[in-house]
Amino acid sequence: MQADNNRTFQQALANGIAEMNLQISEEKQDAMLAYIALLNRWNKVFNLTAVRNQAEMIPRHLLDSLSVSTYLQGSRILDVGTGAGLPGIPLAILYPERQFTLLDSNAKKIRFVRQAVIELGLKNVQTEQVRVEAYKPSFMFDTVITRAFAALAEIIDLTSHLLSPTGQLLAMKSRQTQNELTVSNLQGRPVEIISLQVPQLEGERYAILIQGQAR
Image 1 (tube, rainbow, N blue to C red):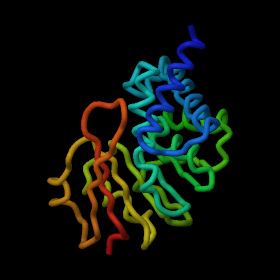
Image 2: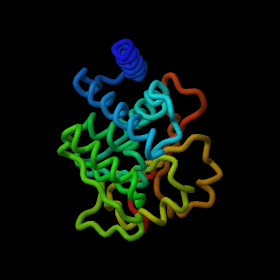
Image 3: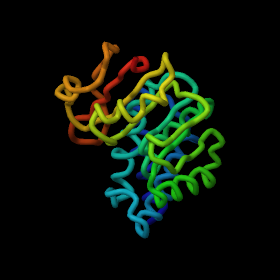
């Protein structure tokens, strides 16, 4: 039964990746599936995600995370409010040449992320248990990414000290957010609203891409 489930999960992930026109090796796909298997086990005890079905985790967690993969910029990536490691862990598996920092203030979730990093052997991931406004790294980031974290204006305010002058903020959203742009502190920076295509997932998904550092 488990073997059948594993084949089903493998096929669902491979099909989704193909629909998004991504090229991801079987080894990396296996690592992503190992991640959600671990997440599913921990979730039964620690309530890390509202998604209870491992099959549903493929589109809602893996494919959703991968939908922004082509929009990352630079070598240093910060995932703010990573929760159980999303989108940071799938993206770190995909891009081992980039350095990812996964940040969250929730001790339970960061404990899981640290265990996942160890079990998956991810050498390009570090974790930080801290509130984003209190995080003071020795360097700035090329891409700051958030997923269902906060309203856009709040995201901009909380992360402005972490973004390099030529970096970008990539905010993943579940609905059209034009109204957020009218109240956000954009200070004339270029903004793009990207419609994300997530196979096997109903509903609209967007990302707001903001270039440059606030002045």
